[in-house]
Length: 83
Image (spheres, rainbow, N blue to C red):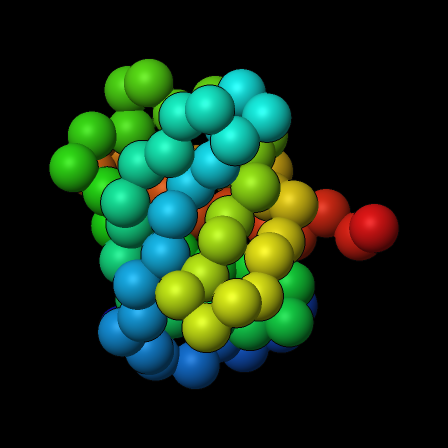
């Protein structure tokens, strides 16, 4: 079992969303796999074209400014940037 290193525990979830870049001119569909007050894990088709900072628009209407903390080919771990 791996040790929990997050400062804020995340809750498992399965929600839809969009990664928004270029002032809304480009979007990437994503799946939100877990969520906390501090960040989230996103599943994407490919993380290659996604920059280190972007806006996350959740299907429930919430929006978050995000910064990537880790990435794999199909997953992103992001922290929310305070407004």
